[in-house]
Length: 85
Image (tube, rainbow, N blue to C red; front, side, top):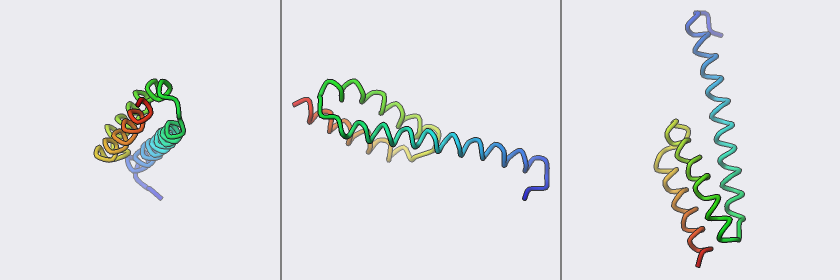
């Protein structure tokens, strides 16, 4: 357990950040899961920018690596393009 005042504050901050990161990560994973089951091209086109934005935000905040976000966005875009054909 932390004894110094600054260390206690750091623990509070890291707990708050961890909770936020877990929430945002789970929300994004759910959005990706929901996107993958879409079979309608117009619905996929509407939902893709929102999911891409969520991935970009996670990468910007350091929750996931930027290349992982890029790979996921690429896969989702390919799926959307496949549905459009």
